[in-house]
Image (tube, rainbow, N blue to C red):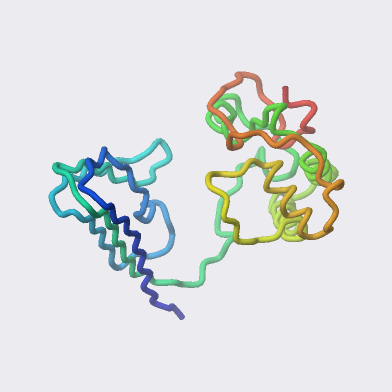
Length: 219
């Protein structure tokens, strides 16, 4: 059984005088690799006198680079998506033989490609983050699928979803601290550095490492 839904997004800005709009990049289009069936999509920009160049980022996500040809007193974006929601088996994937049990080692080439997702710098660590990773690292010789189930359960038990009004992307430590404070109401349980940039970077290291190691062993 499937459900068809329509999602509408509108954002508008009005200015008290005519202004020049520099090129904008909008990331408001469903990814091509999404398993959800997209039956309809529309993307409208106002003012209408503009030029759109559709691009893809290194991860295959669509982004629209919009160049505005003249001054305007308004900027408006309207997006609508019609999607068909169907039941998807989350375990419908293939696991390589070397990764059937956890922990495992990535091949050198694959490890280099995945390094931006694996690296955690010293400034991004804190007591909460180290404790969370230590809980994950306690699981040894598990079937990888069972470990994924455990990891998802631990995330669900540890973090809360909440609405925040702060601008920008929070770091691992800051997000964990906010969730911890909401649960415990005690700020002293959430000590740790709060760096001002998002987690991860594009550094690459050639050596092969375990899929999950202690934070103190990463660098």
